[in-house]
Amino acid sequence: MNYKSKIRMSIGWVYPIGIFMSYILLFLEFWIRELIKGGRSDIRHFPFITIILVALMFVILGTVQWFKYRNWIYPVLGLLVGIATAQVSFIFPHHPGTDLLKLTYFISFIIIILFVLVNWNSFYSHERFEINSRRLFRLAAERIFSNEDGFTERIYSGGRTECTRDELLGFVRFMHGHYIIRPFYNDSNVCLSFSMNKSLVVINEGTEVSHVTISYDGSVTVKVSGSDYRDFREKLNFDKLCQSLTDTFIRFLGYYREGLEMRILDELKSAR
Image (cartoon, rainbow, N blue to C red):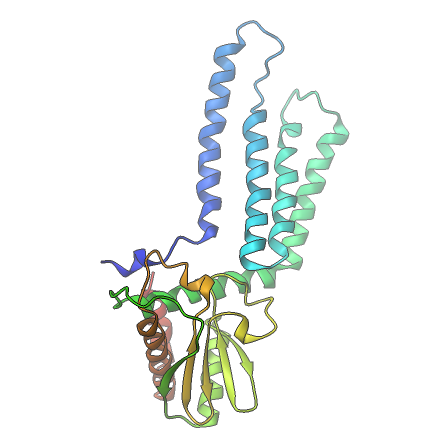
């Protein structure tokens, strides 16, 4: 079985699919309106139905992303884009709307641009974190084919690794700098958090999401969240998944200690 199919599609893919489908609906509505118009003056060429449906799509997707990621920027952006989309018909030639209504579209468009620019770091960081979290889980699930013993809430003890405190902290900085994990530093360990669901930008504790904890004495523990586990299309052996994540992080730490940091990025990029 191809391991690429084991994780469900990211919600971000709904946007290009939805936009592509909207073009199809747009042409269909134009065609239907042209067929039934005849000499009737009460039927206009404007694809009002498609425009409203697309506007609702953005609002609904923004709301869904709020419940999934718990990041407020997505419902706000969905609402702003939905409002602007609903106003698109105002800029059509010969639209019965007033110049003031046409102006509101361009104001909405400018507000969207400013909102994205102000919150760009949050948008960018979230997308990079989620992409790399998916790659981590794909790497971990690549060679797991057994499906007995599914998800449990317990923390998995993965084993030990050999490294100095400075090597561990340097490794963590490298992983964070490339948006692979978000670290949380404690007195005796470092919690390396990653998630395909809740946004790492908004969490306050690393234990809120899936994480690997590496102690300064070399012990490694793993916790996979229920929401991340449910993103797999099939039930995987939970212990094997946790052990595979342990092995992945220990292997990456080994690459870092040997000065082969780029191998970490190469492995992640290969998990598409």
